[in-house]
Length: 206
Image 1 (cartoon, rainbow, N blue to C red):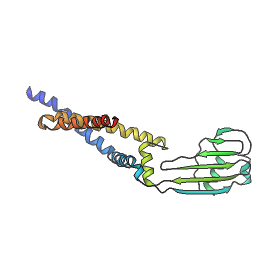
Image 2 (cartoon, one colour):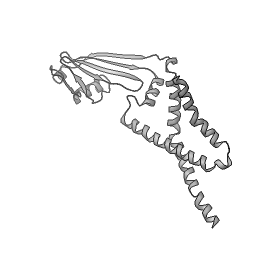
Image 3 (cartoon, rainbow, N blue to C red):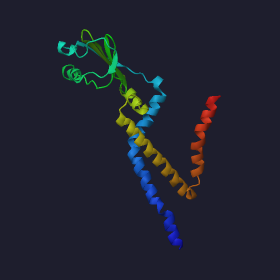
């Protein structure tokens, strides 16, 4: 009977161990990225960025002027033919997203991780200006950390990694508790990890 009880008691150990190492393996690279960018974000003022700006000024062909002319104010994407023209003739990948149509200008904001971009089109003449600013790889990774101007797929990925981290932490805590009897330092070290952030926060308030 004792052997049966012991078997039941330890039956969860292999499962929790597997859960622990698999969750850590899945989120290893992402956690490493978030750890590194946590440091770069914390010292953002000390890290110098050298923004690179690309500016292009051209004019749309007369065949497309009818698709942008007018003075009505609205919110809608550029037409497919205009987007295709930018792709083929200007080598610009303009997404089909909502633009601001004013009486004399069409303005399209194109924010992105680690930089910014915008497109302005004169509705009467077809003259347009495209400007793109890139602040470098560190700024790019920092924005990925914050989920700033990222895609829907990246936001889902961040949620998935967060769930894996929760599983990793909870399974790790269970394993700590399971083997704490043979490791006297388990709870003191765990207590330090719990109390230290609160002490720092309390001290920083005064």
